[in-house]
Length: 154
Image (tube, rainbow, N blue to C red; front, side, top):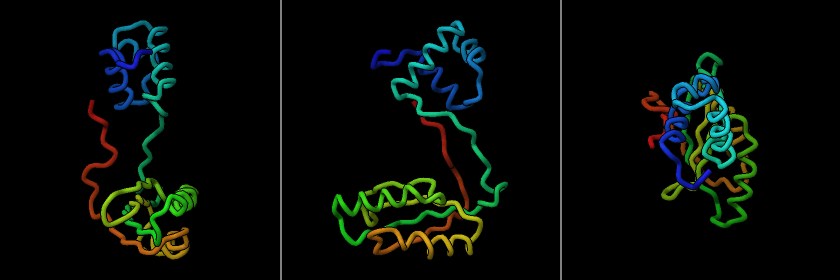
């Protein structure tokens, strides 16, 4: 696959982003290519890193994880070693959905799902403040999820 994607590749990406459950035959029909060509192109999109995986969107509230919390983290030192140590440890926490190194008042922003405020209080006390190098956390409870996991526009 070339570095540039053609209109068929882009359409495939848009359709799969919207509905990852499309069968190869359905996808081929919607983009106007044969199933064999569609399969080859889809595999190439994976091989080239344009597609990194396919997964179902689970409804957090249905599983008792309806509380969304954003946590800003400040480390005690800004060194490559302290960042690496923090990142290695936070990646092991199952409650952390996203972890981003950011510029500004915080070093990292974490996206966490919890059952309720008490569940988050336990997570904070047992796991977050025990992470290596954590000097300060600031917690933001999400009141309403206006846009969440929107499709990438391209």
